[in-house]
Length: 365
Image 1 (cartoon, rainbow, N blue to C red):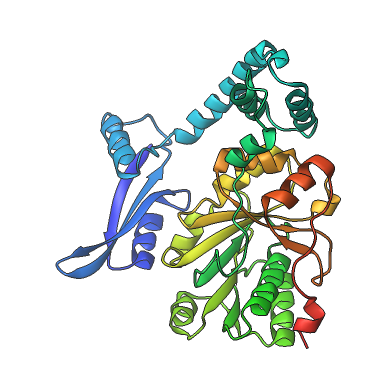
Image 2 (cartoon, rainbow, N blue to C red):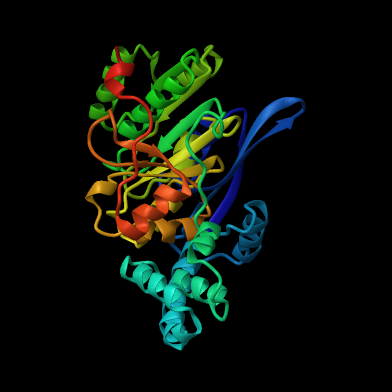
């Protein structure tokens, strides 16, 4: 793999250099802003799979890339896939060795139920190891150590920018609207704006703009880097941003670099997912939308799901807290801020949580 660091006065100039030299298939490994002679300088490391035999200096380049990217070196994706396959074989051998007789009847019953909910073997093994020979332990206590909760309220989420990411059709736009309405109910005098950054699907933009007009929210359509820079200087207390779902092969971190969008300072990114997807797909979405500001999970379309083990699986893998739970199609009474009580009622009894707040209809009038 060919790896090279490019420098220039701004991101746009550097990306043009990368496309000109490495072509459109280049992969962004890292980006940072430095100063050169007192002037801002953008530095981006990019890589390209070679079409010919690897040159003799590729080993040193690979080591340099690993150091500069904090260990994320070229070829890590293939290594991750190989490790995932090895892990599956490993747990297929270890799982039968777990003696459930070392658990109390209540612990064993709860763990077997979670397995029927499609909780993965590594999660079940983690719970088994933590509870074996300790019958006084509650499985709910252990689950709280695996799946964190941070309720989506102004008290717990004071950041100025809140961006909503996730695959197409997961419910990003409707979740954004519900949370904006709830927050305005909580803080009536707070200046809240809605912003659209998804230029791929006009339906989401029209829906967001429609409800912004009904609810008298300022609406911003983010098309260019200048739009983003202007938004940061507007006197809004909070901005809710609808990010695009992105097609196959694209990643949010690279998209943000290309669009010159800074989502780092005073910003929280919330990943909107549905338990309809397989755990493998959900893990793929985590990688696709992984950015430094990724802060919470919002689960949607819960009323249409058959099992809820994926809420445990993804919490275990990411350690991201669940901030909100969404169910139903209306904006009036179909979202609840997350807490451990409604989360575990959902997993163990399939009982939908009680919606928070007053109706959207009253908020819009």
